[in-house]
Image 1 (spheres, one colour):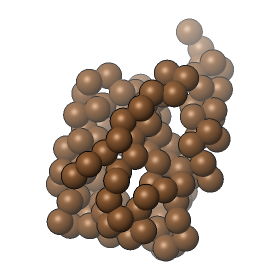
Image 2: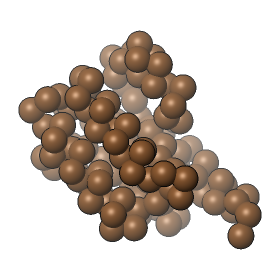
Image 3: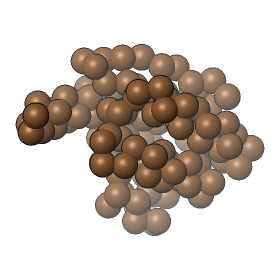
Image 4: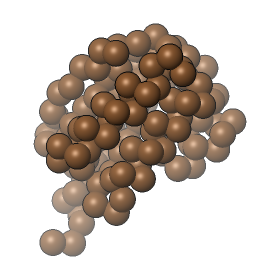
Length: 119
């Protein structure tokens, strides 16, 4: 599974380059997310702009990543296409994950949050 990785304003941005995040790739997807977190990625944006379909196994990978971050990190999601957004809403995970229209908004929110955090 190919994932583009960039850093913007100190925020790690992961962009899965798959049209479909389903059971066939969700294990690799979860592993990649956990590796980035273990490697120090505590502020992460997941850019789903290339993803047209996502199933429950991929959502489970996202939940695992969020749990792995615990209280010391933050994960934002951006670029969610309508069909994928419907899955987030149906599962009510739109209440758990912060969804942004684009990468700039997501990165900006995490940077602002970091600035406001007590030292």
